[in-house]
Image (cartoon, rainbow over all chains, first blue to last red; front, side, top):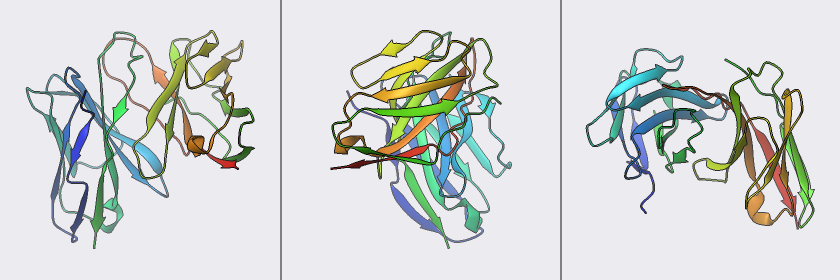
Amino acid sequence: KAGVTQTPRYLIKTRGQQVTLSCSPISGHRSVSWYQQTPGQGLQFLFEYFSETQRNKGNFPGRFSGRQFSNSRSEMNVSTLELGDSALYLCASSLPRLDNTGELFFGEGSRLTVL
Amino acid sequence: DAKTTQPNSMESNEEEPVHLPCNHSTISGTDYIHWYRQLPSQGPEYVIHGLTSNVNNRMASLAIAEDRKSSTLILHRATLRDAAVYYCILRVSGAGSYQLTFGKGTKLSVIP
């Protein structure tokens, strides 16, 4: 069974540009969530999608957005990049459960460097 | 959001048991306690979760205090492959969305 796939694995952008990151969940998983990881702030929740709908969003500015497609694949976009957006962006997928005990399966992440 | 508190780092000798503590004094009655770990250069990996009773699986055991304000992840015999950052997370139960607060975690070093 293939795991969560994130592309690209590494990318370098300059301030002011925008970036789109992609996440392909495990087959059958309909919930996808995104996280930003930095040395200073640790792992922070960005947003979660289920059936193409954003169900929850963390405390990030509107420059951070995402979407989910009908095949459960998800993308996140960061516009007007700032130096502080340099981070490892992680995607996780899970089977939705009513009691929310579904195990999260993480990808290896996309490492973004903003110059 | 409910928060968790963990020590920044811990050390263990190889093949000895490791007890990783987590405080979650503001836990709600329906919050599940989850543990994940992150090995270097990898995404986090699920370890174990529980609600009220102690839990065991092939990776670890989870001991939950009677008042649920703290829990302990137990690795029965630490190996070098267990060196990682361990995150204790509260996950609000119920239908619908969830939001996870990871915190900084505990960096476990295993000494050969």
